[in-house]
Image 1: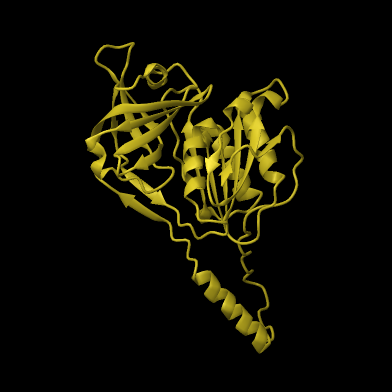
Image 2: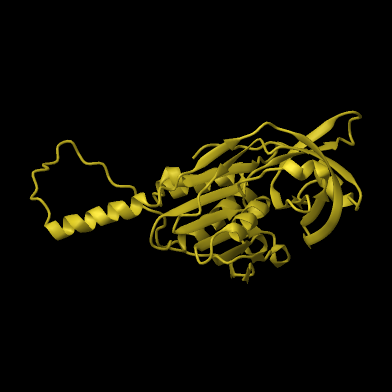
Length: 310
């Protein structure tokens, strides 16, 4: 099923709650001399515990030795005015391993402003075809940095060196629903996760982009519900990052989560990602263990990121 155009929003009131509320702690002064529940209720509680233990949501981390690889540009495709997809081939990819949709690799390019200097940036392995030894990377064309300049002018046959991934944090596909939130820089990881999810599982994506030309579609068997927030429709004035954060927060609040246990993932500019993370934890009471947030870029600091813990 091809998804992606989804719902467009402009300004939304806040409503509803999302996530799974963690149980409130029992007060030490509480009188716990209550009657034992009826046997049928106890059996039902036991069944519930068994059902939950069948879905442990075990998140695993894998580490590997970093390896540098030399790739050759095989295909180039513009996904929109601010995103370029480049596919690379190389025999060096024979043992390439990327187990999580939000893995990152290091991309190495020469710095045109300083002879002999190499610039390193993190990118997501968007697609990997082991049989063809083909790796696809989506480059966000959002600044005038060395890697963006390389991607803008790359041609078939050009070479690029990469390193990694050094490791993966693998989230099991056994949650009842998924919430994926971010800006343009999060789209490669969001698209990959949506496409890899099991058939029928509910996944909502909420992404802020400049306009309709930046909307992407994903091939997936999951029950994908995309929401696109366009910056051009947001109220003018004020801090641009604060507007992103407010618009994404409002979009989250406008959509109650499905029943069951869910996993939330956020990636955007560091301040925006932190604001949304705090909102999910403190207002929506989403379990910490089932949330990951990261600052994929830091405003005013070229090449910086903030992989803070939830």
